[in-house]
Length: 320
Image (cartoon, rainbow, N blue to C red; front, side, top):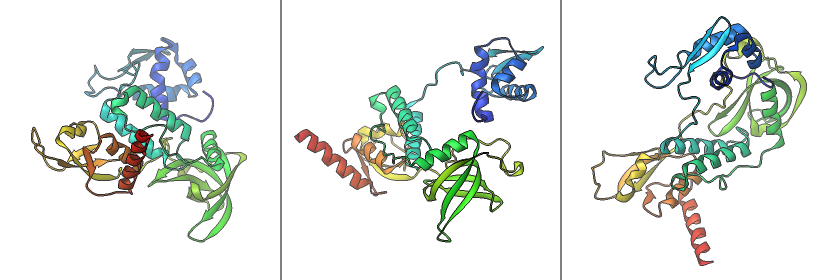
């Protein structure tokens, strides 16, 4: 494999289809293809033995046989089949993607929009909670792309950084470790050579970034042995309290929402519930989609204004 070293998780996910397409491949050949030593590959194959489907009995776990230096997949535990999402799973994923799209620098904007569009297309219009065309993604700064590319290629960076606590701009050379999204802001976690320690650099305070031409080499004792390779999203999604008409109570089964009280089999009047949402824009589109049958009990993040603006825009289109 070329490019940055894959994480163990990504390796494990790739191994099953790799070996399915190459039954009986020599272990040393597979190790070379995957960029591993034979001992590392054998350790990963032993890890796959305890991976599989819920139930986790012998009949549910991935079965890969390797003996006399050759490898074959006996049971793939569904990895060889396309992933199918339920309505609730798709909507939670869409909310997370929408939240990611609004966190500057956390991910490539076009990739996020493409993922949202593909999920919506697969789920159909009845489950459409987020529109890829309407996702508000700030124009990416060139410096953000430089940082992500250096992270992927394991290259050292020279940063011009504004430190708000000291109200000063400094230049420093850093060795990238991880990109993290924390509470709506994106940070580069890196080894700072001048400070000789790990520091967090907020993307929107990095004024410039350029590769030094050197490989990123943070001290081995400060880097996790198995970095996740994924942005770290901390905290839970925000919540809003809503009121739902009886004929729309079914939405509780399809969205990240919970009724405030135990429901009767056939509610006689509106019920109150708490829903988790990825952004005010998503919440506004969600409310508008129910045509007044779902209402906010308490305004959050200016959502009421977004709903009113959206409703007026829709009415104006009909008039036109």
